[in-house]
Image 1 (cartoon, helix red, strand yellow):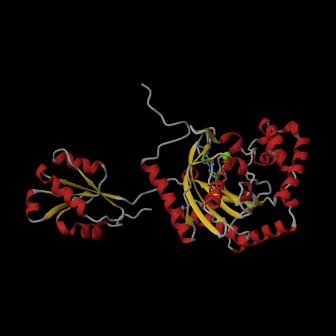
Image 2 (cartoon, rainbow, N blue to C red):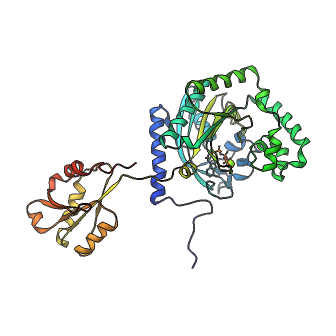
Image 3 (cartoon, rainbow, N blue to C red):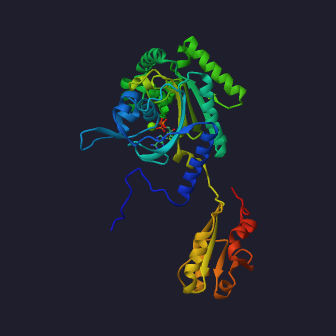
Length: 421
Ligand code: ATP
Ligand code: MG
């Protein structure tokens, strides 16, 4: 019989994978707290229009990747494909437009893409949004947070920060026209996909990974030449800031983000691999987003990173958890052992495991099999004097420990002895 499977492009998280996943989220959350960003959690279900109005009908997400459906009440809903538009919606819904807001979020996102390594239909993002300021210092602050996050995970040196300016809406319009003219002159050499995109969203062609397209794009006009004085100054201030802070970057004149709501700053942390899933963290400024979904004219800048793409950059996460087993020498004492465990206060990085079946030999071999560092064994004689035997599996040494003293004993002898992270 065929085994029951997960939905295509989705996966169960368990074992080492969920340990790594949680490790990434924990690093992210503690950094966001340090920088005084507040957590926000928006629903996975949203009205479709939140995304269709803001991301642009020709964006990949809206044109082909959204999980759209009509529910029994004829409401047009989507499984959220990304976080930023949902957070903008939440700011409007909760009347938070007056304040400057710094938010962080993490959770699953949904896009119906062709599943492959680093590209799932249910994937996870961590992200931040700095809303309510148009100051380049906010752009710089969100980039610093990205830098620190990637450094904490020890993957910063594997990535390159690419940065560009997309100017304002007017500039993009003018640039779009000039780009379209150029690409139309070279249309015969473009890939079929790019020919399609030329009709709806020529900017996306700059993103193409097709060899021929890349050749054509190299001769295309670039947006930096179209920037007005204000956009130029903003970009220069940001670049100066990166220099002063010794943050390595590359200006990539052809970096565009695939969504309509971006303007001015756009950036991506990419691996040097030349495949289409090489962007780990991406973001930029979005001063038109709020107006596009019916809110006030609010500015914002932020980024999102794919947790699965980060995972691919981390070779191995060694945990420093130690397991300690507990068992008795006879059935009559099993409940006493459970009572002892229940009373113990938790100790960082130490896990207690109660073995409740098998003869003594089996219990020992089970404790070994799960890789415990040792076992507490409760026998009749020890119980009478309110003690328990400790056996250290790495040395074979055995000793008696007072029942009231187990916690202290573990802390003194074993806590963080095997630091390996
Ligand atoms: P890509 O060009 O790889 O499709 P994107 O521009 O669609 O990325 P964003 O919408 O900017 O991606 O999302 C931010 C990050 O989320 C990406 O840089 C990537 O790390 C991650 N991401 C996006 N789509 C997926 C997916 N289908 N599976 C896994 N991670 C994803
Ligand atoms: Mg995409």
